[in-house]
Each structure stands twice: as structure tokens, then as C-alpha cells.
Amino acid sequence: MIVLGIETSCDETAAAVVSDDRTILSDEVFSQLDDHRPYGGVVPEVAARAHLQHLDGLIARAMETAKVDFGDLDGVAATCGPGLIGGVIVGATTAKAIALAHDLPFIAVNHLEGHALSARLMDDFAFPYLLLLVSGGHCQLLTVNGVGDYTRLGTTIDDALGEAFDKTAKMLGIGYPGGPAVEAAAAKGDGTRFKLPRPLKGRDGCHFSFSGLKAAVHRTVDGLPEGALNETDINDLCASFQVAAADALIDRCANGIEMFKDTHPGGSTLVVAGGVAANTYLRDRLQSLAEDYGLNLMAPPQRLCTDNAAMIAWAGIERLQLGLTDGLDFKPRPRWPLDPEAPPAVGAGVKG
View (cartoon, rainbow, N blue to C red):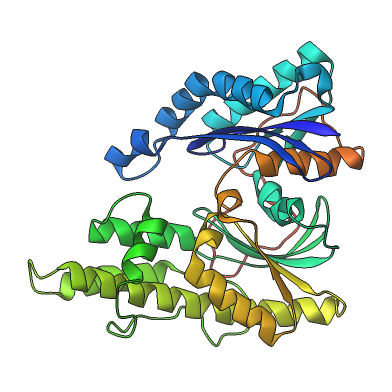
């Protein structure tokens, strides 16, 4: 089984061809970082126009690299939400057109499910497993019972961790995207110098909160003498932020693991996925946590943590193998929670 995957939910335009033996036949990504860098963040209209400009060429290149034509495909999968709706529509419409023209099954993939299943593209481990989904827009702990079957245990009540990384980088003027910039600076800094909060640490449950940590960074910067923010200060503040964020994350995940083990005593796997999962320091901390609880930590390679189409193609394969296809009238969704039945988190705003 071979599936073409298309990803256009944010600021990467991507197309990939993947087979059901877990071979990535091609994986093409066009990064829009240069388009958005002058604005310090993603501009939805700019992103949508870039998807329109580059997607057709990426698909052609992915098919050529994979040495297949449309007649060799068993399906076409595309991210249909959640995400910036202009870009999502570009990818979904393109995939539908291909499916219609070549009489292929169309699979509407939840972008978050793409991340949730991405580790299974690398290794055939069993359901259920505990998932930490951590990115610029989401920070959640979920039990993955199977394809399309998720139970949310915890979520952020305010900001996602990736957003906190990005805003910290912006406050310190060290560039966009913020995650890699903060991680690089932190590697040269003293993580004990600045005393920053660990939001919700020690509390029951496994919800997350990072707005207070972000605000504390802002207050720390404002508290330094004017003009005194030198390279050492930046490195130390990045390191202190990263340690504080990791401490809070590990505390919340420990509670989540205990909740998972209570309901699934045979569960043996913790998966971390999403863009922030590319952070080496956080991976190391999570590895130690997993070992403490006797779990195997599974994480996609870093190139599959950030947005990509290979994970969308793989999610399409997993769904297609179960006979889960979608009509061409499927409507793209700006919000699409993995567990739509999950109750709102106390103190949270409106988040998917």
C-alpha cells in the first residue's frame, strides 16, 4: 500500500510518499521561515499564498523521487485541520482534486493524529500508549487507544510550551523560530542563575500552564539594568527558562504516567511528538522519567517532529488499512480536538 501525504496546516508546505512497510519513499518540505521571519511569527495570509505557490511543484517532486505515478497510489491523505484554515484548504482541495482525477480514496487526516502516530512510522509498537503532544499550538497528554481513539488526560490551560519558547526568543531578540534559538543559547548558559517559576508543579492532575513562566521571563528582562542584556545574560536566561519549563513538564508528565498506568497497567510506552519534541534537553529529561517508571520512550527522529507530510501519509495508511476513508465533501476544520468528549480544563480558555 502506497499513500501520498500532503501537509499545509501552518508554515511548512510538504508532500511525501510512504508505503505500508514503513518506507518513506520521498519527503519534500518547503519551509516558509524566510517569508515569516520579518514579522517574528507566522502570518496566515502569507502562509496560504506560499502553499498555493509551492504545493504543486512539491507534489511533482515527491512523486518523481518516489519513482511512482498516480496510478501506483492506493490513496491520498491530507491534513484537514486543525490549523490555519487558509493553508488547510489549499492542501485539502489539492488532495481532493487528485483523488477525484485518479479515482483514489481520500483520507482527511487530523494534523494532531499525524503527530500522534508518527512514532509508529519508525517502529511497530502496540496500542495503547501514553502520548505527550507538545508543539507551538498544543500541549497535551493523551492515551492513544487506537487509530482515531484518544482519551485526553491533560492539556494546557493557557499557552502551549512551544509558544512560550517562541515568545521568550522574541523578548530576547534571538531570532525566529524561537525553539531552536532558545535551545542553542541555553546550551551555553547557566540554568541556575535566574529563579523562574514552575507552573502547577506539585499540583494534582496533569494539566499544563506556561503563561506565568513566559511572564516571569518578561519581568526578569525588564528588571535588568537598561542596556545590560548581554550575551551571557541571554544564554543564562534561556537556560533558566528551559530548565524551569522542563521541570514543570516532567512533573505534569509524572502525574500523567500514573493516571495512564492506573487504567492501562500493561501499557509500556511513552511517546513524545510535536515540534518541541525535537528539543534534545527535553528528550533527555523525558528519557530519564520514562526509565523511572519502567516505560519505553519512543520519539520520532527530529525531522519528523516538526510539521511534515510523511506523518500525514502514514496516518493515512493507518486509517486506510481500517477502511476509514472520507468523502470529497469533507470540510476542513480550523479546530479539531483528538478527544472531542474531553471536558474543558478548569481555568482554561477556548482551545482545541
